[in-house]
Amino acid sequence: MSLSGDFADLAGPALKGYKLWAATVNANGGLLGRKVNLKVVDDASNPTQAVTNYENLITADHVDLVLGPFSSTLTIPTASVASRYGYAFIEPSGGAPQVFSLHLHNVFLAQPAPIISEGDAFANYILSLPASQRPRTAAYPTADDPFTEAIVGVIEQRLAAAGIKSVYSATYAAETVDLTPVVTRLVAAKPDLIVSGTGGADAVAEVKGMVQSHWTPKFLFFTGGPNDPTFPGKVGPGNAEGTFSTGDWFPQAKTAGNAAFEKAYVAKYGGTAAAIDPAAAEAYACGQLLQLVAQRYGKIDNATIIAALHKGTWPTVEGNLSWDANGSPLGSDLVVQWVGGQLLPVYPPAQALAKPITKPAWVG
Image (cartoon, rainbow, N blue to C red; front, side):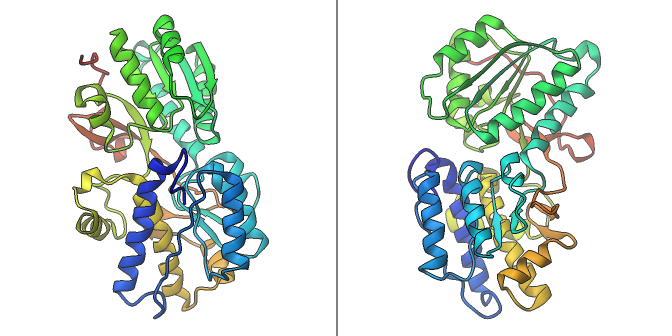
């Protein structure tokens, strides 16, 4: 896991999810009567170090099982290591197309859908609006990251085909701190819609820049940032209101084991269920899948895990999961929005807990 480097803050909740699962399963007798010993190694957010770590865990430490790291950037090279040694690779957050284009039979993303689906989910929402209410122009800035670029690319392609004009499109280095040039271009172009490929901190920077400019777009979508429960504390509750993102988990979900997960999380880490980062649920679901295989088959070796997960559906806090031959999930994501101070699913209507709202003007 990324205990240091660029992904450290974002990976923190996922590590909490892994640790909570291990503590929970051990309190109930472990896996098939064996206590789970969770060994965590720092990859420093570096793909080369991540590969070295998995090589060592498998060939030197002879671990029984491995779970995936945080981010597509680190999942892409490490999934291949696990495949080479015949290890199942259940992973929480590597959903970029490049992960599944490896055509590895051992990979399973513990989310309802690949990240391409996130782009489709938001595009479906925009295109569901009456023509008179749709944005006429759009801007598409994104970090140079396989996760963000895939989502933004899908949305731009679909909306352009529907006649929504692109007035700005740019890619910036993922480690960029000063986003003033990006915000300046956005404000100058004044698009009705901004679809921004962000990881978290850059979303905060963009919001603060637009607040200072006193210009508010009609629609504002971030790939990452608003789906973090701490987002309002970073930009101000009034500025979070009306921002869109997509989600795979939310506290009100009636998924398998979710109530117990939330109770255990709050007991272990404090806070409230509403403050749980979805990354924690994604990592917890990885462990749930191991438990389910053990329960159904009475064994937990890697060959059994791989063969088992390619059959049927598997109920977790992330929903009922199933995958294609390359480990890409077969479900769909939800569009979420900050409404009335809560991050809620707003699309599709059948799964929405609130109606989408118009982006209010910035506060401050």
